[in-house]
Image 1: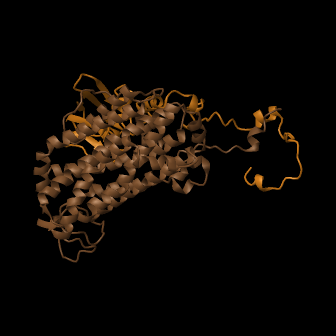
Image 2: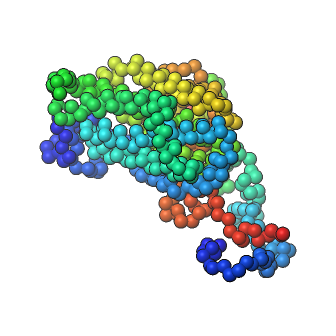
Image 3: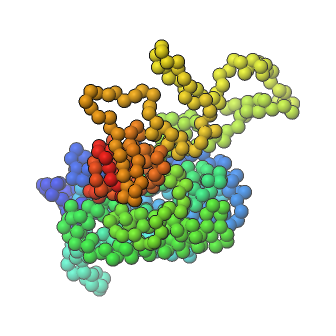
Length: 376
Length: 169
């Protein structure tokens, strides 16, 4: 079905499925087929923050003092997160917007993706603070084999869907010959790829991110790189919302509340879902090994991090209605909950001028008056 | 001082200690003790107002403990009681035998935490789904609309209170 930016057909919005129905026309939010996406948009907007609100000047000092193997852990995580958010900042838009059929879902996808661009901007803010030349960190993302390997597994389902969806939006269903190559486009295959793509997105947001989060918070538990941890806390809050969004999409599909085709596909793909979760968990464990190759950090080592990966994988796959993949049942890093708790995050953009009200700020200003009671 | 760096310097100056306006003794007397916040509640004429907290928050026990202490202790203003209406106190039972009593807390999660039953949490606002718990029997009321995906037989303790005795898994 050809994409049009403003569909002039007369149709019943409530009869449309989430995807592959009539292209959206009026961006109206007075009525919603799935109210949850409207709620998610509202919540995400209320979470708005800017990286510059968090003062990182003390982190620079902390970073210089870190031993080499901890610098490696910190910078590698930053590279990985930069990769993940680079993907998330554009892919939901590119993949889902051409085939979305509900205005509230369309806006949720845009809001979701936009907030990922803020995360990307915050990595630049962090990197600028810790190294004199940010290029040494960013340029390595496409060269470092460990990061590149992550990039392949993160993007393969996106790319496979987008590839076929492009043919679908231009040529529709059928067997087409393009540049001498035969391409078969069926809606059924497209929907299958979309379902698997959403599962892999859910894995990205719900498992992959949390390995880096754990490291950032482990530094902050020792009062190191605290500004960074405050930014990560804001990112973690957004990611918790995003993964709720993808869980809802997947569950609406699987329960046949939307498009009956998806219910059948979800049933057929149950083994694939387990495989995607399991593979991702194994990849993240491999990543943990790379992180700690030169030595552990205080409070966190490869084994604990691997157990955490297993624990969080069980949690997330459970939310989709699957049985646990791994044996471990308890959270090996219980202190992380306090860092992930948004109660401790205060956002009030109008108060950004006053340092004491800054979101998660560390006041690094020293005034001469502070030495008033010093005697020389 | 903001802007102090902009004033042009003439020659080198020795740092001179600024004149003290208050003597140390006076300072202690005149200035309010900012480290010790004292919250008082007025209970009327018959009850003398009492300080609730005389320690700085940072010196206090961990926030979780503080939370716990607050959660299941009665508030200074007691619940309004209506004739013939039961006070909303409900027993909460777990299938592994643990029990708790919900009586004063803001949410089920806070109540359970204060009674040493720990449930995973993250957002405490109903959007992350970390505290998802299976409800076997009973009914809950949501103070805030839960946003996380939950099944029909699941509840989010972080944003609900019991409406009846509960049986949880």
